[in-house]
Length: 312
Ligand code: UDP
Image (cartoon, rainbow, N blue to C red; front, side):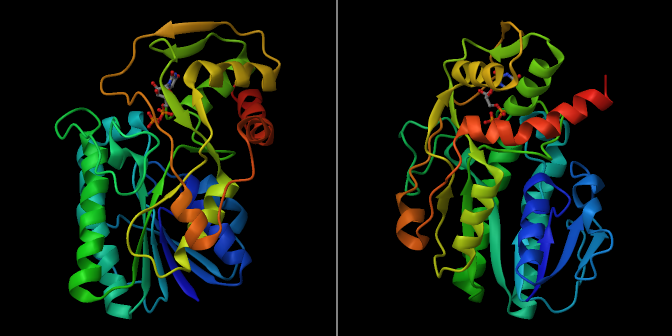
């Protein structure tokens, strides 16, 4: 296949690109590098089946005929989308539309990277795909949440009205090597703080929960979904739920750090709980994650350690 991946220099996009290349496909990556990094695809510099277009998908472009379109471009951490609010809304609307138009033009399949943020601060727990969510449409997270919800609606519309073969994956918190070191996310913040021996900044009392999926599990799930005929959203995440305080303690254990935990104010609209119900993914393509949090943190240790050593 010739595959188009937007956000190919991002965290998930770069792993997806690696997996697609490993299967023997040709990959055209597109990224404007606003949050992605060229370092994430540096190892593909001499790969003849890979090319990277430095381009903003909000502007129309034509990559030539493709068989599959994976739409992964978007700022994704609360710090990044707060900084790039309008850009986030644009990439989730104009950008997604341009990518859908490419799929429509070439009769390609389409998979959109959606998010657990579609559930907002959920009142149903764990979250099943048929829950419509509890999203503040005007709060600080709305630039991301509503962009992603609009992308889902647009993707469904291209399926319903133009018969594009579309898929929607709802991705829960994912981590691993290549996470941005400065995007304010919990795993990168905690790992870097622990390795530097700095205080670990738990927001609120750390009682809020998240469910963390190691990146290789996430990519397996996404590829599994991409081969089904399912058009409605499917959760792909690790169902093991952790409080943020427990997560801080796990990071301290794995790094062997002497860091202390300190408490800082909880950001506005920070969801209290997040846990995917993955029965649909299990039923449709027999997927479930294999790597638990402590194992995944160990697998990420070298990456964060070398970052800390080179940025002492
Ligand atoms: N968090 C924290 N300390 C940090 C960074 C994040 O306690 O240094 C908390 C944050 O308030 C949230 C959770 O960790 O409850 C996950 O935050 P992240 O930014 O990774 O992603 P989110 O799931 O909120 O999009």
